[in-house]
Image (tube, rainbow, N blue to C red; front, side):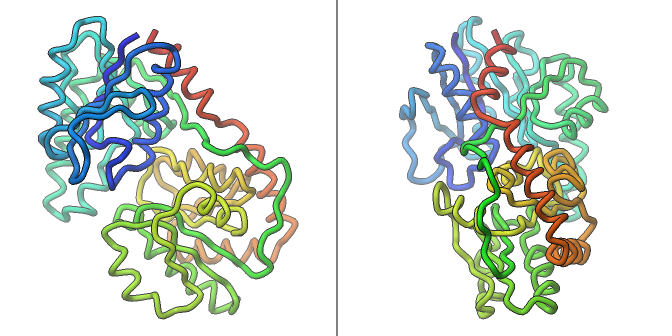
Length: 349
């Protein structure tokens, strides 16, 4: 088995996210099966042009825009026995005409374009859909029912949902949470993730619960703005980027995860929090309406005001809170990277 992954970012990219973690697990699955896995991506500052990580060969060239064209040229040099995984993140690698290519897409960008670019983003919303339609006869792999529906509406006929995995084993029983109310935001600090809405929700909660705390876990373009505006409030803790045990410890001790994103492919942080018996309260948008089981593992809300209301409602109703927390542990048990890798290998072989 020989598989080439085309993704604008690699697993070491400073702005890597859930899509890159997912791709890395698929690439490792190929290596574990005894195959060859290569990953073509842009070359961020400080990264090598080529290196091998966990048996996966990385080739880096170009910016996040030009790498799409370099990646296509690289794919064209491969023999036909290579499977090409074209990862579409607002823009693909134009391999729609190759018989040996497969589309991998976590989410459509749509609202992202206008949030990031304002009025200038509208042409990109149309262009994204036009480019995606070129792939509609290909096998498309995605991670959620939301993106499945988006692709179906664009005329795709061969779509397979292969859900995200989970890098930690869900707890067997509910952990001991902090005595005072602890909330957490976990994710990139950028406009499309809406981190300031989590802070606004917390400030409304704090009007009623004076000893409440909020942990803002992550880094990104809005870090300086948010810390400059809110770091004087001692009950808002900006931790910066965390991973592994440091991140898991905060999720385990916190009572709620706040997820105010404008759109997600799935919502990997939701399942990570659920693995520690932590319900999520997120916006009713694509992706989150799949990862958050409304009324079973958390709540879907329309804005930060309703988000605050749900926190207060559950904080005062311990019986309902414990029911949701137990539901989180059961829901999280459905996800593992082993399952994800198995389904991927079955689909492409």
